[in-house]
View 1 (tube, protein in one colour):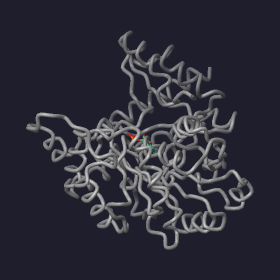
View 2 (cartoon, helix red, strand yellow):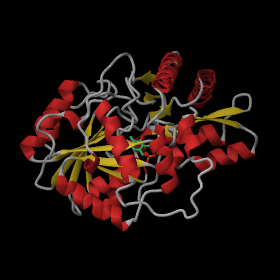
View 3 (cartoon, protein in one colour):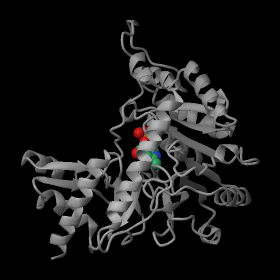
View 4 (cartoon, helix red, strand yellow):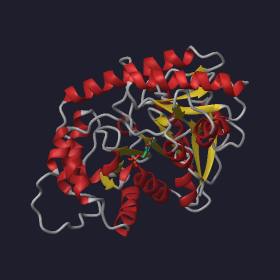
Length: 386
Ligand SMILES: Cc1ncc(COP(=O)(O)O)c(C=O)c1O
């Protein structure tokens, strides 16, 4: 199993904290945003006496309400198209397991969410990367690049939209091009849409679930983790109209018995979160993004993209080895008793040697802290470069 670039430096952060250094965590997508009150209140004062398993597909009441939520967002999803999972993570495992055999291949634009490497390793599936670059703003690579990678073993293309770690939001044209490609080669298009709500600058999100003619090919991965800042709930879902895929996914679901009961109750209640909550959260993230990009651009030699969604960006740093730099930040550096933890980006690629000078930064902390953290990064780069 590959280690997670997001978490592998945690022991160094723990040592730094024991020494009394304050660490700004820009490495992990753990928002500081409050979970909606309706969700938290729903699990207080529960009176049942036995904490039972639920249905393997999740509570029917939750799936029904979730289908209604998707429908209000323009996605024609019904209760039978949904299986509730233990986070989007388990949904990704189910998607791979249900569509691929050992040694089959999945094409993924990189850089990609690092745990796709772990999930594919666990599923015995080979990741075939297609490279998107910071110079092109991480746009979808040309379709010809995908096409030349397709072999008889290729079963699926996996995209993350909007993207972690790039913040890239696929355009309507790009989604339609991918749809044509998967139809032409009879592949699955798995779309990880866990950041769907987090779109900025009035841009529009195009889901794989409302593309005409793609019903048999499209699989959507979703989660409550980021939408409601409920990462600890461990609730997500796999969604598809393809009955065979859902029947296979159901076997995986039965094997692990059921998703967590308390967290399903909270997730069902979270669907009543008022729109005002999202309006505030999106405004907050947009301001954080603008602050982060502005501050990073002030540092000589740093190159950063312009994320349109999610809450991450990839930054190219004037260092040879961002892995070493990130470790050094925790082990050997502090600025007035404070330092920063970032995720080295090489682990977000599967091509060896790519992204060595890049880090992923999550803008999940307050603007004031982002400004301080980027300042620390600037001071650190000045010392490190020397
Ligand atoms: C792109 C993406 N997909 C899936 C996940 C998994 O989320 P969870 O298992 O918490 O639902 C994450 C978590 O950070 C993510 O960033």
